[in-house]
Length: 192
Image (cartoon, rainbow, N blue to C red; front, side, top):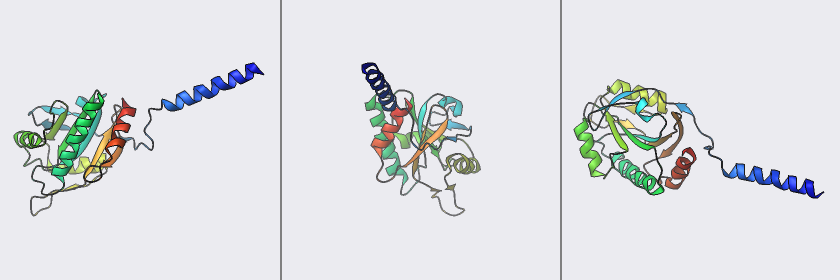
């Protein structure tokens, strides 16, 4: 009887320990990220290969944005600071410009500096066509990007995307209002 009780306790303990160490994100989307080629704010070539094996956070912004992009970028900067405070390694931040004809590397660098972005692990991207970014956003990130014929305000959503080291989009979160920072940090931790 003592033997059976001891075995039962070992099995229960093993199951509990296994459950505590779960590193899986619940309800992960697992969307594949399509390859891309872009130019960084440092005027260097950048592609999906530069993010291989890393966890990364992506958003879509533009520097002439009159409403949602400044708060989104400020919130991304706060998230970057939280990631640094957690001591996470191999976490990159990527902001895709949705207005590449306007957002040159120099303009993106100046924009990043307004928000105290740490450019060691936050890359602002441009250097592709408007058609490419609209198609890439729709096919890969399941989001809308559309530059209207009139005016200079590009239509886009306010999500931030968590991409795992396996190159798959795991989750989306609102980056504009009521940003779920703690949930994002918890999800990043599961990918470390």
